[in-house]
Length: 111
Image 1 (tube, rainbow, N blue to C red):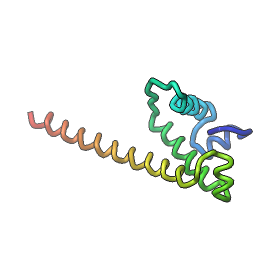
Image 2 (image 1 turned 45 degrees about the horizontal axis):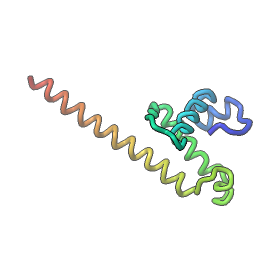
Image 3 (image 1 turned 135 degrees about the vertical axis):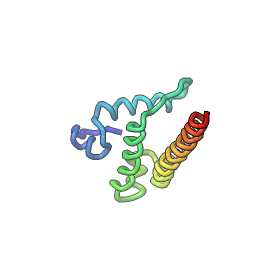
């Protein structure tokens, strides 16, 4: 996510995060990708924002699909789909949490 010689200001511009925070996210992503991964990794909303920003930023920064694939190892359409699904999943989770909270408030207010 922060490979190369990017300075802290560039990382913050692209990802909305410090280089150190992005490196922490990289460690979590590396754990998920490891073959023997057996534990959960939980990301905060800020960390999910960084991941989403990285995906969407990479999609627009490469001129061609071939360049994108050669530099990232991903196909551009897969990165777009992943970023889109991350956003959709978060909206769905927030809607579910919000509905749950309203039901809980209604029960508490009714007693």
